[in-house]
Length: 325
Ligand SMILES: Nc1ncnc2c1ncn2[C@@H]1O[C@H](COP(=O)(O)OP(=O)(O)O)[C@@H](O)[C@H]1O
Ligand SMILES: [Mg+2]
Image 1: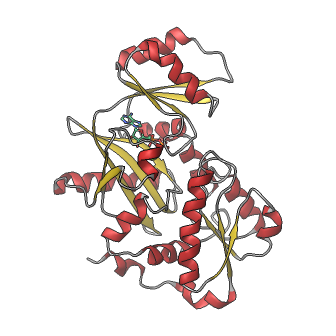
Image 2: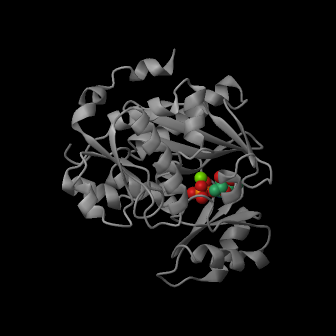
Image 3: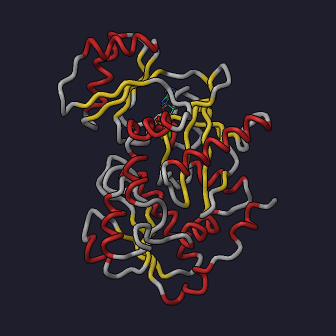
């Protein structure tokens, strides 16, 4: 079935002339530059669709600017944007907004919290240990735990995106250095078993969530870091990923399940590694995935016959208040 059939009745179109849409992008997280790129693309698409659109960078006069809009299209990544804080403000101001609500946004930006939800629901995620620098840390215990699931390991800030502050470590000697790097970005750090395998991502959209075609990601350098994510031709994307039908169905099912159990709304992207022994491990979920020219969700949508403009209009159509909407 054509996926577009699910989205043919976009009620927002009839309100086009009477509303102002604010695209919120930029902000103050480490992913500011990526967010500005995402926001610019969305802003241009809305203008092309002839919506009255205003570009808002929350770094500046946020409260004043919010008074001028009727709907917020969120294009913020990372903290103070993707983490429930802006969503909470918009709830208080009664301005409908795109994407997930306060709670789902807050959980999902926190990789440790997300993993606890996944484990509870028996969704596989790599073995890990969490470090919180607000309380005392016994580094020997941490080393023991990492030893248990064995090297290589990967060390990440708990609440960052775009592979910022992430290091792959092959032995104990490099572990402390990697923890230091991650700790520069966050007072919580996560050490995970590094899973060898194929990197996949599945995008979920809609009020009644459906999975878009899965993408396989093949960074030319071998590591899907910041450069590989945002530089043209640094990564090969295979969409739809060449995996057999049964596994495709299973992974799409895992994506939809993650979206639902975490309480995401309208859009999410679930990052996975399909291990060498055929186990799909969920790495993380994103509630405001990138929409830059090299980003994944627009590629998945395109493969399903959904142009960038239509994708943006589908998301705008689903904008709402989530607490008492
Ligand atoms: N446990 C893991 N095993 C293998 N690769 C990983 C693992 N965790 C992260 N990676 C790699 O690092 C990238 C970024 O990690 P991710 O958890 O998705 O954080 P973010 O995208 O928020 O920076 C992934 O896309 C993947 O390439
Ligand atoms: Mg990721």
